[in-house]
Length: 253
Ligand SMILES: NC(=O)c1ccc[n+]([C@@H]2O[C@H](COP(=O)([O-])OP(=O)(O)OC[C@H]3O[C@@H](n4cnc5c(N)ncnc54)[C@H](O)[C@@H]3O)[C@@H](O)[C@H]2O)c1
Image 1 (tube, protein in one colour):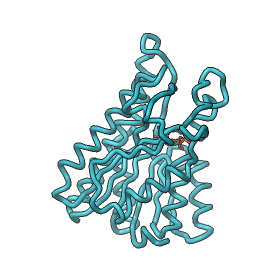
Image 2: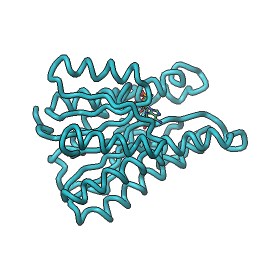
Image 3: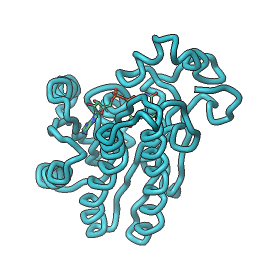
Image 4: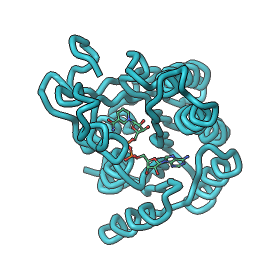
């Protein structure tokens, strides 16, 4: 308990799924948590629920693909809470098309949400972190960031990019005592994956790990907690697979 006491953490995509589980866990561990999402209704509800316990959550409506919104998120957080310690870029989006059928709009939506959004928020957070010579960034890739998955060329490209973006941040900003890591979830039942998991088309989802089950959002959140906490003070530039062994291959998405 209290692994994040006195820390201010932003989590993007915190209105549902993994981001919501992380917001609840980080708040329980003592952090002041800013939930950022474009889904206003669910984001406000999530923050209100956390505030029933400790009153340490705030929702800020944010579309992370927009530079002004990303800048506002970082600046507003710093203004309200006198600083920022942890940026967890978790918001993501995927669409299923083969490349020859993929529209430019779909490509842009997926690259912008998964990759550009992490670039934008990190850019503004890093300026603050450099000034105070401390900070933590956790980005979100996927097993789809290092293994090709059927029907998701844009998602594969974006999530692969997130891994290298993270390594670049870790390399460049270590001198400012900034750590940057990336988490690669396997298959987790959330709004993003529920339809695919329930359809026969994605039959591979049934064998979602070597344990024959999907992961839980809470299991990803626990790994995220480790990476953003001081327990991981010597961990940077690392890509952590939290996927029930899916990275071993041997079965197909
Ligand atoms: N669920 C899985 O199996 C799985 C596997 C690997 C990686 N991931 C990644 O984990 C992250 C969380 O996904 P999840 O499964 O919890 O999905 P989810 O759909 O439950 O949550 C995603 C959240 O991101 C928000 N969001 C989407 N676009 C946004 C934008 N432009 N600005 C702000 N918020 C935006 C959504 O409103 C939603 O609340 C994503 O980056 C996803 O790619 C998920």
